[in-house]
Every structure is written in C-alpha cells, then in structure tokens.
Image 1 (cartoon, rainbow, N blue to C red):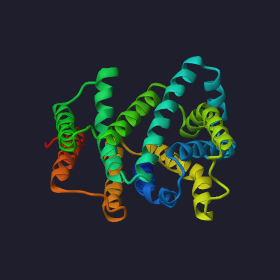
Image 2 (cartoon, rainbow, N blue to C red):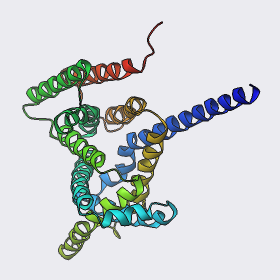
Image 3 (cartoon, rainbow, N blue to C red):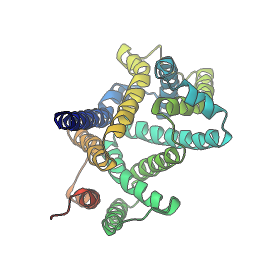
Amino acid sequence: MFFTIHFMTTITTSTREQTTQGLLYAAACYLLWGIFPLYWYPLNATAMPAEQILAQRIVWSALFALMILPFSGQNRQLLAALRDRRLLLIFFGSAAALSVNWLTYLWAVTHHHVLDAGLGYFITPLVAVLLGRIVLHEILRPTQLAAIAIAAGGVLYLTWLSGGVPVVAVILALSFGFYGLLRKIAPLPALAALVLETLWMLPFALLYLLWADHRGDFYFTELAPLARLVLIGSGVVTTIPLLLFAAGAKRISLANMGMIQYISPTLQFIIGLTVFHEPFNIHRLIGYAMVWLAVLVYLAGSLRPLQKPVM
C-alpha cells in the first residue's frame, strides 16, 4: 500500500512539474514573439528595405539552425525528410507561407504598422480553426463558429472604416494559418523543420542579396554596429522561440497553448501604442474590440470541454 501511494504521488508530482515547465516554455516563447517589434526597432533608422531584412534573416537563421542541429538528435528525421518527395513539397509550401509572414511582419514593424500586426496575430487562431474545418473537415462547436463570425465582422468594420482591407493583418493571419496547416499535415521536430524550411528559402535569399550587392543596394558594413548585431542575431531570435514553442506544446494542452498565445499580440498592441505611438481612435477601437470579443468567445468555448461535470 505504501509503495502504491508513493508511486502515485511520484507520478502526480512529475505531471505537475511537466505542466509547470510547459507553461514556462510557452510563456517565454510568446513573450519573445511579443517584444519582437522592439528587437527590430534599430533597423527603423536605416533605409534597408524589408525584403533585404528578410533575406538576411533567412541566411542567419539557416546558419544558426545548422550549427545547433548536430546537438539536437534530429539529424535522422531531417535526412529522412530530404528523401521524401511529399514532405519536400509540403515544406516548400510551408517555407513560402513563412516567407510571406516574415516579410509582412518586418514591413509592418519598419513602417509603423505594429497595431495591424498585432491584430493579425489575434485573428490567426480563428483562421486556423476555419482552415481546419474547410481542409481537414474538423467539427466546429457553436462557440467557435460564433467567434469566427464576430472576428469577420470586426475585420469588415475596419475595412469599411478605412476604405480598404487591413491588408497587413489579413496577410499575417492567412499566411501563418496556412503555415500551421501545412506543418500539421507533415509533422517534423521543430529544429529539423526549421532547417528544411530555411534550406528551401536560402537559395532565393542568397540570389536576392547577390542581386542587391550588384545594384549597390546591399546593406551591412555601412550599418551602425547595433543594426549589424540585430541582423546577425536574427538567426538566434528566430530559432529560440520556435524551440521553446515545441517544448511547451509537448507538455501542456492545446487549450492552454491557445490561451497563452495571446500574450504575443497583446504585447505588440501595447508596444504599438506606447513606443511607436501609432494612431488609434474610438472607431478603430470598435473594430479591434470585436476581434477581442471573438477571442474571448473562442477561449470560453475551448475551456468548457475541459471543465469536469458537477456530480
């Protein structure tokens, strides 16, 4: 009896430790993604175009990921993926979606559209749910359908208000939504997946940088030391949050990951208002409030199945 109690206590303690670690990993991941606008801020003072920042980010990310890959134990998975035509095609698509997402985000940060970027990442989970229904034929609960409808109403209101679609938010939400869908179809460990995606993007990035150098538009040596460090460190700040995300997802439920995810766009929203001083009025607040309401409805619907029935 004593050994049984001791064994069960050990399992419970281990599970709690795993959950605590998972929450910390996930919170750290979304905290880093949330303060990304501050990381890229030193590049705002340069004339460096967003597409060149993207190209250099791809190069430095590929180098850093390849450096740490031998220590991850994921070499075999990567080699197996390189021999699988279906996986290669899927990861070409995920690399393309990720490139669009990164480029749009970098453009938003360097052109003072951080609020729109934050709105895009508030919408992203709802887009993911909608894609799951359309592509994977997943069943949606009424609260999820309501959340999607409310979010769509908020985007339509912002579209009507500004006389145009909030392009940055829509592109970010759709690109990351499709990226998540493709990664779900072809699961691969986080680091191996990042290496494969950056290897797909690397030739295009290098060709662009060579072309920019040929035109005399290549930025690096003439940049301020801090700006050069930002570019070099982009490989680290791209890879580390992804690894934290993977570590957190293994230890906690998807519902908890979904709740913690909103740390990121919330921080981006605060930074856009307080640091970048982007314009924000009552009419724009109404559109954003509709999206936030959709998020609350979605989270409430996600939490309800987790609640134990009252006996």
